[in-house]
Image (cartoon, rainbow, N blue to C red; front, side, top):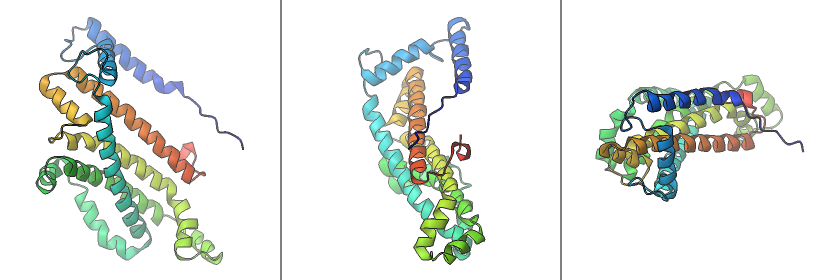
Length: 266
């Protein structure tokens, strides 16, 4: 079996390198005070201390592992709930016109409400803590998963379905062998978008009173004037979010081997 080579595109490093150079110049020679924007060197030390606890330069020394665990657990729980509901309703609405007419108007109505608008209601319903955070993550992640699943499922050509039926596929077998493979690229796009939204809404949920989690660290750092730890936490979220996206994409390719890089979301 021929192994697929992983190609590294160095062009993607150009903009981050330019931003890093500009950042260094502004903090070194531009007169930017450190309490507003710490230098890249200082932030690197803060990140190392946040992860290892060996430097002891911030109140958050060595706490990254615990906060990251709680945030990952919340993202996984909210995303799993959104994926289960979004895929189930998406496949139903995409293949059954009556189901789409029934649920589509309400879903499109609800999705126009901004996430911050749900925050007071979520606090009343679920209190401050886990339930509130899971609700916000699941609600926000649901919409891209549902919409992309509906779009992909509704676009399966009728001739493809008839060909499958002529070959003896019916019911769940037709769905598994014809509908799902044809729809999966759109489903994968929806899942990746939903996971990205889950990380964004994690911070919104964790700023509402939880004591552990990356969003809680950002809130605490802002209140205490630690801009360095706020930026460090943002970098951690960006890196871990990218890693989880890569893992999800790898899982999607394992489920649907015919997916190719050219059809993926960048």
